[in-house]
Image (cartoon, rainbow, N blue to C red; front, side, top):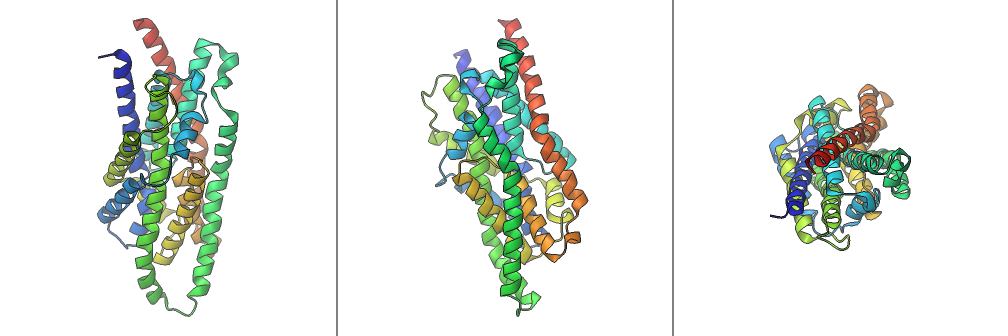
Length: 343
């Protein structure tokens, strides 16, 4: 078997493994609120989320995949080894933060690892002065801006929706409201899982398509249907495996949730993520969901949000891209010297 084909298959397997890890790492985004409000049991909730993660493959396009695969890192300087190193960097950071129970962004871990590996490759082959040539500045400006904008949208949308719910149901007893919103929360959690599936699976689709282009198996950056289905299947299976450490942080430690606040948080997060997807922007579903949960908590009173927990989450967000980038850089250096030695 051709050595290039073997390398591509290995990278595709690693990319799907990342997608699987993304699923269980980010399972909390889709199920934390519905578990916290006891609308569904944890087992039923992850099954519900996984189903909608998968069917997101149909109907949301590939704009985010193209941004991740070719809109942030210059493909002229990308090799299959760069993509492999970037994936390893992202997986390493995801596993560490999963173990620590921190709801960090798998999306930004992937982007950080990919960028770090690409910059390392250029610095090793062309010199330090050309390191930043690996990055497409416009793509990074838009993505980094949405690190702030996306959770703020989630927070603001959730806050406004929560106020609307309180006003609209002001004459309804809390018990009657809970019965009504238990049903509505099934819809809102499905919508959140759908948005999570399309935005996050597209990032893996972009990486796999990128390696197929750089290896010469595709002439243009068009995502094949086999890649679309494979990425969504992997993230759905990962969601089925759950991520209970992070469910605890997102679903109970950040603020206390009821069915109506869970509905508002899920709807606000889903709307914000789908807006970003329509703009072909890779956003962190974790960031947006955390912002939405904080938004519904703040309606009660600012002290209802555990800002100490929120601060820890914020620091994890800030660290994700540089930390994953550093691991991706180190992995690229190791691969560079190993392949040079074997050659």
